[in-house]
Length: 513
Ligand SMILES: [Zn+2]
Ligand SMILES: [Zn+2]
Figure (tube, helix red, strand yellow):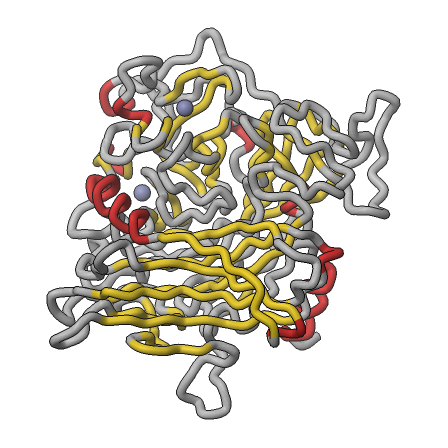
């Protein structure tokens, strides 16, 4: 079957379809000069984004430099045919990366949803979010994450705005990213790159709020919400209408449920809210220059719909099938120019199965790593999985060298067995809870013992690594009432992700071979 047709069929079945057209900016319009379906004005250009030593994809550059004046620029797309019956919450997100010299005055960098009726003929209302402070915050908080402006603040990250459709006559929305008052001092490093436009529609917001008419209980302290099937621990599944999921008399799962990109927004993890940790994170692109599962060199970018697939079967374990391909840009590997320490390995698709406890328990005899992991508390190789299916490793590479400074912009690199992995906070990992640093961070992954790994923040502007009260222990973990025991990623502070398993990891079954 033709690849495009396959994708279209998949999209039709999907519950959280991307409603944006040409989301990867790879189709040209009739003139060949502009990306199809977008409007670009001012200092906005259709561009390759990524430097020569990185996987380059199409996107848009916004340049904050204008000789002798202030720069402005915007990229937008009108999306028509919004069917409100499919959900009243809209989430607009994109992936962006600010160069060091991208600066604007008065916070004038924003993303916006304009609501229209009459197929775009009637403007009704707008919702916008200023995002410049997030750029500044990243520069301040994550420069420590890496050297040479790599793997640190200048990483790709997701920007997001979520809104309830305000009026019933809304049938179209315009998605815009725009800046004004651009005041970069020179044309050098003055750009903001963006790609991966996404508009999704849901019946609930990403923090568990539900539109008033919905049948689901809107309560962040939900234990077993109406219609939700408990999967064990903090996990729940909300069947689609008409979807039959066999359960026993206590409402627990009797057969297995497969979660992939099509129903990722129906798998919930409960902490202070109901999260969809895997939504938008289960697909990836096998890029030109990577290796496929058979070890063959990939010669053309290829979409991987099933990069992550999770199975629950009512037992105390969940199975994660992962191809381990990052869903964000990477450096070019093998590295022949030296920016990645001449890493000779490839990024390869694998077929791995990880089995994680659904309801993790603390192991009373657990020990954390001592100096350079001399007690072997953490194995080499995978120690956990980010929500995009890429594995976490302990802080060391071969010969026990701290690996945290020889990684690409998104904090990853491949191991000698061609497995891409993170040794520290992977700021590029998309999450449905975009981390603005304004509250406790969202879940970014799970250790192999089943305990969650959260992003770096404990509360607004406060990193968990700096806590005086309820500080992180040697496992890089602490306890609170709503999340239970959880790990935190700690940018710039050893052990960066986890310091040991506080629960029991099924190490012997780490690989699916
Ligand atoms: Zn490594
Ligand atoms: Zn915490």
